[in-house]
Image 1 (cartoon, rainbow, N blue to C red):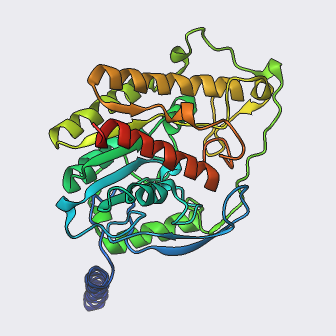
Image 2: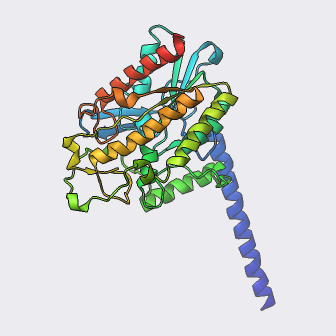
Length: 361
């Protein structure tokens, strides 16, 4: 009986050893064969992605390409003669990465093309991440910008921070992890692959390249609207965290000697009769209050004005992009995401800001 138990134990140990050795060999093989992330593995910058995106979104090219470079950014390869270029990294959420727009139609690519007409050695890398708010922007500043030190960081911020205030638990869809969570396992290519497969099986990630997210306004019953305080900032519990994050971003930029240009968030909604009878919603996040589209814009304006005030107080660059992009269906395929025409408008306005505030000083 004892010999039988020892035999079973030996087989179990040998099996576990074989499994462990196999996993180790797979891990080594994946590290050798697959491109490894350059930055903190909490940031989903996947190098050399190349996918075709098919959409039926209003104002968006129906078949487009989405590619990333060796850093996992959208855009051309970082130049070898980095110090001889005017280098820009754009930071933000989905309205920056613009995953459903073609590589050539993303506002960051259009911005690069336009700047190169006068400044040939200009490079723009799009480091946007779906779902990122200002708290994610801080992580990008700490883990990416501190490392690569471009000449300029352009940050489009606002709508996801508003979403944090409107969500029941202050959370928002994100492909990253909170800063306090140790990302040790995510340094393993094998674990990252297993995590991705787990998310796919549970439906936590988009598994199809098809996009059918056209926005369809929903009428709202006035009796169902939530009562809000006269001072709308009191309805935004995450606003103080937003202020803290913006100040932290400015502090980091100062420490690494990088210019930062903030952009306020444009939106389809505005404070007009058209949107007073329509439900104000963030389609990608649940709300804990019921508001109209007009009120949604008023709440976002609190964030936009807060950003402008902080920049004025700190002497940081900020461009009121929200005031320059019309609240028009030609420019948005949903409440916040840009059509091809909207992307071109954003590129044009950001170029104006860069030239006036930074290049032509």
